[in-house]
Amino acid sequence: MREVTLVGGGLAGALLALMLARRGLTVTVYERRADLRIERIEEGRSINLALSVRGLHALEQVGLADAVVAQTIPMRGRLIHPVSGNTSLIPYGRTPEQVIRSVSRRNLNVQLLDALAHEPNAIVHFHHRCVGYDLRTRTLTIRDESAGREFRVEAPVVIGTDGAASAVRLALLQSLRMNYSQEFLEHGYKELTLPPAADGSFRIEPHALHIWPRGGFMMIALPNLDRSFTCTLFVAHKGTPGFDQLTTRDAVRDFFTQTFPDAVPLLPQLEDEFFRNPTGGLVTIRCSPWHVNGQVLLLGDAAHAIVPFFGQGMNCSFEDCAVLVELFDAHNGDWGVIFPRFFELRKPNADAIAQLALDNFIEMRDTSADPHFAIKRQLEHLLEERYPGQFLSKYAMVSFHRVPYVEALERGRVQDQVLMELCSQVNSLAEIDVAEALARVQAALARR
Ligand SMILES: Cc1cc2nc3c(=O)[nH]c(=O)nc-3n(C[C@H](O)[C@H](O)[C@H](O)COP(=O)(O)OP(=O)(O)OC[C@H]3O[C@@H](n4cnc5c(N)ncnc54)[C@H](O)[C@@H]3O)c2cc1C
Image (cartoon, rainbow, N blue to C red):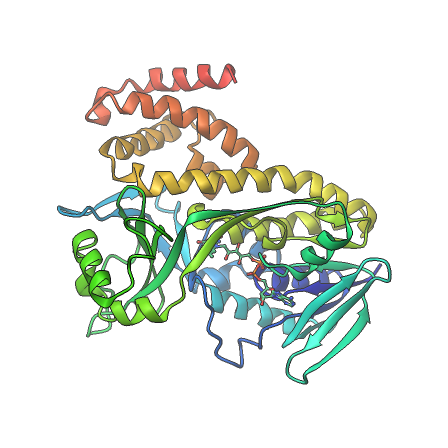
Protein backbone atom coordinates (compact mmCIF):
# COMPACT_ATOMS: atom_id res chain seq x y z
CA MET A 1 0.00 0.00 0.00
CA ARG A 2 1.65 3.21 -1.17
CA GLU A 3 -0.71 5.57 0.65
CA VAL A 4 -0.64 6.27 4.33
CA THR A 5 -2.64 8.63 6.55
CA LEU A 6 -1.20 10.04 9.75
CA VAL A 7 -3.41 11.52 12.45
CA GLY A 8 -1.34 14.14 14.30
CA GLY A 9 1.43 16.33 12.91
CA GLY A 10 3.26 16.93 16.19
CA LEU A 11 6.82 15.83 16.84
CA ALA A 12 6.54 12.14 15.92
CA GLY A 13 3.90 12.66 13.21
CA ALA A 14 5.90 15.29 11.32
CA LEU A 15 9.11 13.25 11.49
CA LEU A 16 7.43 10.01 10.43
CA ALA A 17 5.59 11.74 7.58
CA LEU A 18 8.93 13.04 6.32
CA MET A 19 10.57 9.62 6.53
CA LEU A 20 7.70 7.92 4.69
CA ALA A 21 7.36 10.63 2.03
CA ARG A 22 11.08 10.27 1.30
CA ARG A 23 10.42 6.58 0.64
CA GLY A 24 8.00 7.54 -2.11
CA LEU A 25 4.75 7.03 -0.21
CA THR A 26 1.81 9.38 -0.58
CA VAL A 27 1.38 10.79 2.93
CA THR A 28 -1.65 12.70 4.23
CA VAL A 29 -1.48 14.22 7.70
CA TYR A 30 -4.51 15.52 9.63
CA GLU A 31 -3.47 17.90 12.42
CA ARG A 32 -6.03 19.42 14.76
CA ARG A 33 -4.05 22.59 15.55
CA ALA A 34 -3.28 25.54 13.32
CA ASP A 35 -0.04 25.63 11.34
CA LEU A 36 2.35 26.85 14.02
CA ARG A 37 4.62 28.33 11.34
CA ILE A 38 1.86 30.85 10.62
CA GLU A 39 -0.13 31.26 13.82
CA ARG A 40 1.24 31.75 17.30
CA ILE A 41 -0.28 28.94 19.32
CA GLU A 42 -0.35 28.65 23.08
CA GLU A 43 1.43 25.36 23.61
CA GLY A 44 -0.09 24.60 26.97
CA ARG A 45 2.81 22.33 27.93
CA SER A 46 6.57 21.95 28.02
CA ILE A 47 8.02 24.84 26.05
CA ASN A 48 11.40 23.14 25.85
CA LEU A 49 12.58 19.55 25.92
CA ALA A 50 15.79 17.61 26.47
CA LEU A 51 16.99 16.04 23.23
CA SER A 52 19.51 13.19 23.43
CA VAL A 53 21.06 10.42 21.35
CA ARG A 54 17.93 8.53 20.27
CA GLY A 55 16.19 11.65 19.03
CA LEU A 56 19.34 12.85 17.30
CA HIS A 57 19.88 9.49 15.63
CA ALA A 58 16.37 9.61 14.14
CA LEU A 59 16.87 13.22 12.99
CA GLU A 60 20.11 12.14 11.28
CA GLN A 61 18.08 9.73 9.15
CA VAL A 62 16.35 12.72 7.53
CA GLY A 63 19.46 14.93 7.45
CA LEU A 64 18.11 17.36 10.05
CA ALA A 65 20.32 16.61 13.06
CA ASP A 66 22.84 19.43 12.43
CA ALA A 67 20.16 22.05 11.75
CA VAL A 68 18.30 21.04 14.90
CA VAL A 69 21.46 20.92 17.05
CA ALA A 70 22.30 24.46 15.89
CA GLN A 71 19.08 25.59 17.59
CA THR A 72 19.75 23.89 20.93
CA ILE A 73 21.63 24.68 24.13
CA PRO A 74 23.90 21.93 25.45
CA MET A 75 23.36 21.00 29.10
CA ARG A 76 26.42 19.36 30.67
CA GLY A 77 24.91 18.21 33.93
CA ARG A 78 22.47 18.72 36.74
CA LEU A 79 23.11 21.91 38.64
CA ILE A 80 21.78 21.33 42.13
CA HIS A 81 20.33 24.24 44.13
CA PRO A 82 20.11 23.45 47.86
CA VAL A 83 17.82 25.54 50.10
CA SER A 84 20.91 27.25 51.46
CA GLY A 85 24.56 27.02 50.49
CA ASN A 86 26.32 26.70 47.17
CA THR A 87 25.11 25.14 43.97
CA SER A 88 27.01 22.13 42.60
CA LEU A 89 27.19 20.58 39.13
CA ILE A 90 26.83 16.82 38.73
CA PRO A 91 27.98 16.13 35.14
CA TYR A 92 25.76 13.93 32.98
CA GLY A 93 28.63 12.51 30.97
CA ARG A 94 32.28 11.63 31.17
CA THR A 95 33.41 13.67 28.17
CA PRO A 96 32.55 17.21 26.95
CA GLU A 97 30.55 15.72 24.05
CA GLN A 98 28.27 13.82 26.40
CA VAL A 99 25.58 16.44 26.88
CA ILE A 100 21.84 16.58 26.51
CA ARG A 101 20.33 19.49 24.59
CA SER A 102 17.55 21.90 25.44
CA VAL A 103 15.37 22.35 22.36
CA SER A 104 12.25 24.43 21.80
CA ARG A 105 9.24 22.20 21.10
CA ARG A 106 7.87 24.80 18.73
CA ASN A 107 11.14 25.36 16.79
CA LEU A 108 11.65 21.64 16.39
CA ASN A 109 8.12 21.10 15.11
CA VAL A 110 8.58 24.02 12.70
CA GLN A 111 11.85 22.57 11.37
CA LEU A 112 10.16 19.22 10.75
CA LEU A 113 7.09 20.80 9.09
CA ASP A 114 9.32 23.01 6.91
CA ALA A 115 11.23 19.96 5.69
CA LEU A 116 7.96 18.11 5.09
CA ALA A 117 6.63 21.02 3.01
CA HIS A 118 9.39 20.25 0.46
CA GLU A 119 8.04 16.74 -0.16
CA PRO A 120 5.63 16.89 -3.13
CA ASN A 121 3.87 13.67 -2.12
CA ALA A 122 3.08 14.80 1.45
CA ILE A 123 0.27 17.09 2.55
CA VAL A 124 -0.66 18.37 6.00
CA HIS A 125 -4.24 19.50 6.65
CA PHE A 126 -4.14 21.85 9.64
CA HIS A 127 -7.25 22.62 11.72
CA HIS A 128 -8.41 19.09 10.87
CA ARG A 129 -9.32 17.05 13.92
CA CYS A 130 -9.89 13.31 13.77
CA VAL A 131 -13.10 12.50 15.63
CA GLY A 132 -13.52 8.86 14.71
CA TYR A 133 -12.24 5.87 12.82
CA ASP A 134 -14.29 2.96 11.54
CA LEU A 135 -12.16 -0.17 11.44
CA ARG A 136 -14.64 -2.09 9.31
CA THR A 137 -15.00 0.47 6.51
CA ARG A 138 -11.49 1.87 7.00
CA THR A 139 -12.76 5.43 7.12
CA LEU A 140 -11.71 8.33 9.27
CA THR A 141 -14.14 11.00 10.40
CA ILE A 142 -12.48 14.38 10.27
CA ARG A 143 -13.77 17.74 11.49
CA ASP A 144 -12.48 20.69 9.50
CA GLU A 145 -12.44 23.18 12.36
CA SER A 146 -11.97 26.29 10.24
CA ALA A 147 -14.84 25.45 7.85
CA GLY A 148 -16.98 23.98 10.64
CA ARG A 149 -17.84 20.80 8.73
CA GLU A 150 -17.29 17.12 9.22
CA PHE A 151 -16.49 14.59 6.51
CA ARG A 152 -15.51 10.95 6.12
CA VAL A 153 -12.49 9.84 4.18
CA GLU A 154 -11.24 6.41 3.22
CA ALA A 155 -7.88 5.69 4.78
CA PRO A 156 -6.70 2.14 4.15
CA VAL A 157 -3.55 2.56 6.29
CA VAL A 158 -3.69 4.83 9.35
CA ILE A 159 -0.93 5.67 11.81
CA GLY A 160 -2.09 7.39 14.99
CA THR A 161 0.57 9.90 16.00
CA ASP A 162 -1.97 12.01 17.86
CA GLY A 163 -0.36 12.04 21.27
CA ALA A 164 -1.40 11.05 24.77
CA ALA A 165 -5.12 11.79 24.23
CA SER A 166 -5.16 9.89 20.92
CA ALA A 167 -8.47 9.79 19.04
CA VAL A 168 -7.24 6.82 16.99
CA ARG A 169 -6.51 4.87 20.20
CA LEU A 170 -9.97 5.74 21.49
CA ALA A 171 -11.54 4.34 18.32
CA LEU A 172 -9.56 1.10 18.73
CA LEU A 173 -10.53 0.88 22.41
CA GLN A 174 -14.17 1.11 21.42
CA SER A 175 -14.02 -1.63 18.81
CA LEU A 176 -11.33 -4.10 19.89
CA ARG A 177 -10.34 -6.21 22.86
CA MET A 178 -7.58 -3.79 23.71
CA ASN A 179 -5.76 -3.62 27.04
CA TYR A 180 -5.47 -0.13 28.37
CA SER A 181 -4.32 1.61 31.53
CA GLN A 182 -3.68 5.21 32.52
CA GLU A 183 -1.85 5.91 35.73
CA PHE A 184 -1.76 9.51 36.96
CA LEU A 185 1.03 10.67 39.21
CA GLU A 186 -0.16 12.43 42.35
CA HIS A 187 2.07 15.28 41.20
CA GLY A 188 1.26 17.92 38.60
CA TYR A 189 3.42 20.59 37.01
CA LYS A 190 3.43 24.32 36.46
CA GLU A 191 5.69 26.25 34.08
CA LEU A 192 7.18 29.63 35.04
CA THR A 193 9.51 32.00 33.19
CA LEU A 194 12.93 33.04 34.41
CA PRO A 195 13.64 35.95 32.03
CA PRO A 196 17.05 37.16 30.82
CA ALA A 197 18.96 39.86 32.74
CA ALA A 198 18.48 43.53 31.79
CA ASP A 199 21.55 43.34 29.50
CA GLY A 200 20.05 40.34 27.72
CA SER A 201 22.35 37.71 29.26
CA PHE A 202 21.42 34.47 31.01
CA ARG A 203 20.78 35.01 34.72
CA ILE A 204 21.98 31.54 35.76
CA GLU A 205 24.39 29.00 34.21
CA PRO A 206 23.01 28.23 30.74
CA HIS A 207 24.81 24.93 30.13
CA ALA A 208 23.02 22.93 32.78
CA LEU A 209 19.66 21.52 33.75
CA HIS A 210 18.94 23.23 37.07
CA ILE A 211 17.29 21.24 39.83
CA TRP A 212 15.95 22.39 43.17
CA PRO A 213 15.43 18.94 44.76
CA ARG A 214 13.34 19.12 47.89
CA GLY A 215 12.49 15.52 48.75
CA GLY A 216 9.01 14.62 47.54
CA PHE A 217 8.86 17.55 45.13
CA MET A 218 11.18 19.72 43.04
CA MET A 219 11.60 22.50 40.54
CA ILE A 220 13.75 22.29 37.39
CA ALA A 221 14.83 24.85 34.77
CA LEU A 222 15.98 24.42 31.16
CA PRO A 223 17.59 27.22 29.11
CA ASN A 224 16.00 28.81 26.03
CA LEU A 225 17.68 30.44 23.02
CA ASP A 226 16.29 33.88 24.01
CA ARG A 227 18.37 33.53 27.22
CA SER A 228 15.39 32.93 29.42
CA PHE A 229 14.79 29.67 31.28
CA THR A 230 11.59 27.72 31.59
CA CYS A 231 11.18 26.56 35.19
CA THR A 232 8.86 23.67 35.93
CA LEU A 233 7.55 23.11 39.43
CA PHE A 234 6.50 19.53 40.20
CA VAL A 235 4.40 19.19 43.38
CA ALA A 236 1.46 17.06 44.45
CA HIS A 237 -2.03 18.15 43.38
CA LYS A 238 -3.11 17.76 47.01
CA GLY A 239 -1.11 17.94 50.22
CA THR A 240 1.67 19.88 51.90
CA PRO A 241 2.97 21.27 49.69
CA GLY A 242 0.26 20.86 47.10
CA PHE A 243 -1.36 22.87 44.33
CA ASP A 244 -4.60 22.73 46.33
CA GLN A 245 -2.94 24.84 49.04
CA LEU A 246 -1.22 27.32 46.74
CA THR A 247 -4.39 29.27 46.11
CA THR A 248 -3.44 32.85 47.03
CA ARG A 249 -0.62 35.15 45.94
CA ASP A 250 0.71 35.24 49.50
CA ALA A 251 0.71 31.45 49.77
CA VAL A 252 2.66 31.14 46.53
CA ARG A 253 5.21 33.78 47.51
CA ASP A 254 5.69 32.32 51.00
CA PHE A 255 6.13 28.82 49.60
CA PHE A 256 8.72 29.94 47.04
CA THR A 257 10.56 32.17 49.54
CA GLN A 258 10.92 29.33 52.00
CA THR A 259 11.60 26.57 49.50
CA PHE A 260 13.43 28.13 46.54
CA PRO A 261 14.96 31.30 48.08
CA ASP A 262 17.62 31.76 45.39
CA ALA A 263 15.03 31.47 42.59
CA VAL A 264 12.52 34.03 43.91
CA PRO A 265 14.45 37.18 42.82
CA LEU A 266 14.77 35.63 39.35
CA LEU A 267 11.02 35.10 38.86
CA PRO A 268 9.56 38.63 38.53
CA GLN A 269 6.17 37.40 37.33
CA LEU A 270 5.92 34.56 39.82
CA GLU A 271 2.41 35.09 41.16
CA ASP A 272 0.92 36.31 37.84
CA GLU A 273 2.27 33.32 35.94
CA PHE A 274 1.43 30.88 38.70
CA PHE A 275 -2.25 31.74 38.42
CA ARG A 276 -2.29 32.31 34.66
CA ASN A 277 -0.48 29.15 33.54
CA PRO A 278 -2.30 25.82 33.61
CA THR A 279 -1.43 23.05 36.06
CA GLY A 280 -0.55 20.03 33.94
CA GLY A 281 -1.13 16.39 34.85
CA LEU A 282 1.46 13.63 34.50
CA VAL A 283 0.31 10.29 33.18
CA THR A 284 1.70 6.94 32.10
CA ILE A 285 -0.41 5.28 29.41
CA ARG A 286 0.06 1.64 28.53
CA CYS A 287 -1.97 -0.22 25.94
CA SER A 288 -1.76 -3.31 23.77
CA PRO A 289 -1.88 -4.21 20.99
CA TRP A 290 -0.84 -1.07 19.13
CA HIS A 291 -1.96 -2.36 15.75
CA VAL A 292 -4.73 -4.05 13.82
CA ASN A 293 -3.73 -6.24 10.87
CA GLY A 294 -1.76 -4.07 8.50
CA GLN A 295 -4.42 -1.40 8.81
CA VAL A 296 -3.82 0.76 11.90
CA LEU A 297 -0.85 1.48 14.14
CA LEU A 298 -0.32 3.69 17.18
CA LEU A 299 3.10 5.33 17.56
CA GLY A 300 4.71 7.82 19.95
CA ASP A 301 2.71 9.11 22.92
CA ALA A 302 -0.48 7.69 21.39
CA ALA A 303 0.94 4.22 22.13
CA HIS A 304 2.96 4.94 25.27
CA ALA A 305 2.76 8.29 27.07
CA ILE A 306 5.30 8.46 29.90
CA VAL A 307 6.18 10.91 32.68
CA PRO A 308 8.90 13.40 31.69
CA PHE A 309 11.58 12.70 34.31
CA PHE A 310 14.10 10.93 32.08
CA GLY A 311 13.57 13.42 29.24
CA GLN A 312 12.75 10.52 26.91
CA GLY A 313 9.13 10.81 25.68
CA MET A 314 10.07 12.56 22.45
CA ASN A 315 13.36 10.68 22.15
CA CYS A 316 11.51 7.38 22.44
CA SER A 317 8.87 8.53 19.93
CA PHE A 318 11.59 9.54 17.47
CA GLU A 319 13.26 6.16 17.99
CA ASP A 320 9.86 4.58 17.18
CA CYS A 321 9.93 6.41 13.83
CA ALA A 322 13.46 5.21 13.03
CA VAL A 323 12.59 1.61 13.92
CA LEU A 324 9.36 1.67 11.88
CA VAL A 325 11.08 2.83 8.70
CA GLU A 326 13.90 0.32 9.21
CA LEU A 327 11.23 -2.37 9.23
CA PHE A 328 9.55 -0.74 6.22
CA ASP A 329 12.80 -1.06 4.27
CA ALA A 330 13.48 -4.61 5.48
CA HIS A 331 9.97 -5.88 4.66
CA ASN A 332 9.35 -4.12 1.38
CA GLY A 333 6.62 -1.91 2.77
CA ASP A 334 4.40 -4.84 3.77
CA TRP A 335 2.43 -3.28 6.66
CA GLY A 336 0.88 -6.64 7.56
CA VAL A 337 4.36 -7.81 8.58
CA ILE A 338 5.76 -4.47 9.74
CA PHE A 339 3.09 -3.47 12.30
CA PRO A 340 3.18 -6.67 14.42
CA ARG A 341 6.98 -6.77 14.29
CA PHE A 342 7.13 -3.11 15.36
CA PHE A 343 4.85 -3.81 18.31
CA GLU A 344 6.89 -6.86 19.30
CA LEU A 345 10.14 -4.84 19.24
CA ARG A 346 8.92 -1.61 20.80
CA LYS A 347 6.35 -2.60 23.42
CA PRO A 348 8.85 -4.05 25.96
CA ASN A 349 11.09 -1.03 25.44
CA ALA A 350 8.21 1.42 25.87
CA ASP A 351 7.24 -0.31 29.13
CA ALA A 352 10.86 -0.14 30.28
CA ILE A 353 11.30 3.59 29.62
CA ALA A 354 7.97 4.24 31.33
CA GLN A 355 9.39 2.57 34.45
CA LEU A 356 12.80 4.26 34.11
CA ALA A 357 11.04 7.64 33.93
CA LEU A 358 9.01 6.93 37.08
CA ASP A 359 12.18 5.78 38.91
CA ASN A 360 14.05 8.89 37.80
CA PHE A 361 11.50 11.16 39.48
CA ILE A 362 12.59 9.72 42.83
CA GLU A 363 16.25 10.15 41.88
CA MET A 364 15.81 13.77 40.80
CA ARG A 365 13.64 15.03 43.63
CA ASP A 366 15.18 13.01 46.50
CA THR A 367 18.51 11.36 45.77
CA SER A 368 20.23 14.04 43.66
CA ALA A 369 20.57 16.23 46.78
CA ASP A 370 22.41 13.44 48.63
CA PRO A 371 26.22 13.93 48.56
CA HIS A 372 26.65 10.17 48.14
CA PHE A 373 24.75 10.42 44.87
CA ALA A 374 27.41 12.83 43.53
CA ILE A 375 30.11 10.32 44.54
CA LYS A 376 28.19 7.56 42.75
CA ARG A 377 28.09 9.60 39.53
CA GLN A 378 31.87 10.23 39.82
CA LEU A 379 32.46 6.53 40.35
CA GLU A 380 30.31 5.68 37.32
CA HIS A 381 32.34 8.03 35.14
CA LEU A 382 35.58 6.53 36.42
CA LEU A 383 34.31 3.00 35.72
CA GLU A 384 33.29 4.03 32.18
CA GLU A 385 36.73 5.55 31.60
CA ARG A 386 38.79 2.69 33.04
CA TYR A 387 36.67 -0.16 31.76
CA PRO A 388 35.24 0.83 28.37
CA GLY A 389 33.11 -1.95 26.98
CA GLN A 390 32.62 -3.38 30.46
CA PHE A 391 30.65 -0.66 32.21
CA LEU A 392 28.07 1.94 31.22
CA SER A 393 25.93 3.85 33.70
CA LYS A 394 22.16 3.69 33.38
CA TYR A 395 22.09 7.36 32.42
CA ALA A 396 24.68 6.80 29.68
CA MET A 397 22.85 3.73 28.32
CA VAL A 398 19.65 5.77 27.98
CA SER A 399 20.93 9.20 26.94
CA PHE A 400 24.29 8.75 25.20
CA HIS A 401 24.06 5.23 23.75
CA ARG A 402 21.13 3.57 22.13
CA VAL A 403 21.12 0.55 24.43
CA PRO A 404 17.59 -0.91 24.35
CA TYR A 405 15.55 0.57 27.21
CA VAL A 406 14.80 -2.95 28.51
CA GLU A 407 18.49 -3.62 29.01
CA ALA A 408 19.10 -0.16 30.49
CA LEU A 409 16.33 -0.82 33.04
CA GLU A 410 17.51 -4.30 34.00
CA ARG A 411 21.25 -3.62 34.12
CA GLY A 412 20.77 -0.11 35.52
CA ARG A 413 18.78 -1.27 38.53
CA VAL A 414 21.38 -3.87 39.50
CA GLN A 415 24.30 -1.48 38.99
CA ASP A 416 22.61 1.35 40.89
CA GLN A 417 21.93 -0.84 43.88
CA VAL A 418 25.53 -2.12 44.14
CA LEU A 419 27.14 1.28 43.56
CA MET A 420 24.81 3.24 45.84
CA GLU A 421 25.49 0.73 48.62
CA LEU A 422 29.25 1.21 48.17
CA CYS A 423 29.05 5.00 47.95
CA SER A 424 26.79 5.39 50.95
CA GLN A 425 29.62 4.05 53.14
CA VAL A 426 32.25 6.61 52.09
CA ASN A 427 32.81 10.36 52.07
CA SER A 428 34.87 10.63 48.90
CA LEU A 429 35.65 8.75 45.71
CA ALA A 430 39.26 8.21 46.86
CA GLU A 431 38.02 5.75 49.50
CA ILE A 432 36.64 3.38 46.85
CA ASP A 433 38.58 0.53 45.22
CA VAL A 434 37.38 0.96 41.63
CA ALA A 435 38.42 -2.52 40.46
CA GLU A 436 36.55 -4.02 43.39
CA ALA A 437 33.47 -1.92 42.51
CA LEU A 438 33.52 -3.31 38.96
CA ALA A 439 33.90 -6.86 40.26
CA ARG A 440 30.88 -6.41 42.54
CA VAL A 441 28.77 -4.99 39.72
CA GLN A 442 29.74 -7.84 37.41
CA ALA A 443 28.99 -10.45 40.07
CA ALA A 444 25.57 -8.90 40.72
CA LEU A 445 24.81 -8.76 36.99
CA ALA A 446 25.83 -12.41 36.60
CA ARG A 447 23.41 -13.40 39.38
CA ARG A 448 20.45 -11.75 37.61
C1 LIG B 1 6.13 18.68 30.96
C2 LIG B 1 6.69 17.76 29.91
C3 LIG B 1 8.05 17.75 29.70
C4 LIG B 1 8.60 16.90 28.73
N1 LIG B 1 9.96 16.87 28.55
C5 LIG B 1 10.50 16.03 27.66
C6 LIG B 1 11.92 16.01 27.45
O1 LIG B 1 12.67 16.74 28.09
N2 LIG B 1 12.41 15.13 26.53
C7 LIG B 1 11.62 14.28 25.81
O2 LIG B 1 12.15 13.50 25.01
N3 LIG B 1 10.28 14.30 25.97
C8 LIG B 1 9.71 15.14 26.87
N4 LIG B 1 8.34 15.17 27.03
C9 LIG B 1 7.51 14.23 26.27
C10 LIG B 1 7.19 14.72 24.87
O3 LIG B 1 6.55 15.97 24.93
C11 LIG B 1 6.30 13.71 24.14
O4 LIG B 1 6.75 12.42 24.36
C12 LIG B 1 6.27 13.98 22.64
O5 LIG B 1 5.71 15.25 22.41
C13 LIG B 1 5.48 12.90 21.92
O6 LIG B 1 5.34 13.23 20.57
P1 LIG B 1 4.02 12.79 19.78
O7 LIG B 1 4.19 13.33 18.42
O8 LIG B 1 3.78 11.34 19.98
O9 LIG B 1 2.84 13.55 20.51
P2 LIG B 1 2.55 15.11 20.53
O10 LIG B 1 3.82 15.87 20.52
O11 LIG B 1 1.60 15.32 21.65
O12 LIG B 1 1.83 15.38 19.15
C14 LIG B 1 0.52 14.96 18.89
C15 LIG B 1 -0.06 15.82 17.79
O13 LIG B 1 -1.32 15.28 17.43
C16 LIG B 1 -2.25 16.35 17.34
N5 LIG B 1 -3.57 15.78 17.65
C17 LIG B 1 -4.02 15.37 18.85
N6 LIG B 1 -5.27 14.89 18.74
C18 LIG B 1 -5.61 14.99 17.44
C19 LIG B 1 -6.78 14.64 16.70
N7 LIG B 1 -7.87 14.10 17.30
N8 LIG B 1 -6.79 14.89 15.36
C20 LIG B 1 -5.70 15.43 14.74
N9 LIG B 1 -4.58 15.79 15.41
C21 LIG B 1 -4.53 15.55 16.73
C22 LIG B 1 -1.77 17.37 18.35
O14 LIG B 1 -2.26 18.66 18.06
C23 LIG B 1 -0.27 17.26 18.20
O15 LIG B 1 0.22 18.10 17.20
C24 LIG B 1 7.76 16.03 27.97
C25 LIG B 1 6.38 16.08 28.16
C26 LIG B 1 5.85 16.93 29.12
C27 LIG B 1 4.36 16.95 29.32
